[in-house]
Length: 95
Image (cartoon, rainbow, N blue to C red; front, top):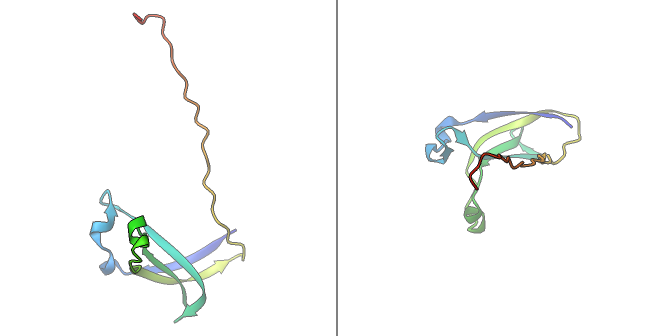
């Protein structure tokens, strides 16, 4: 699976209040089959659960187009790390 998307972000539309830790902007990217003006990719702010439930309109901040795809775009699956916590013991503890 591979694809290349070109996006142009309108920085004047970026609400600095949406930045996480002052530097991260959570967004969603949409790839559509239909095109408008040669663009079939758009980007909007990620919405909170409350915004989605209240049907708040998405705020789009970028648009673009797919420039390459192998035709096999799949849903990415999160890798799960198997973390095993070990308990350290010491014989010099008073209890």
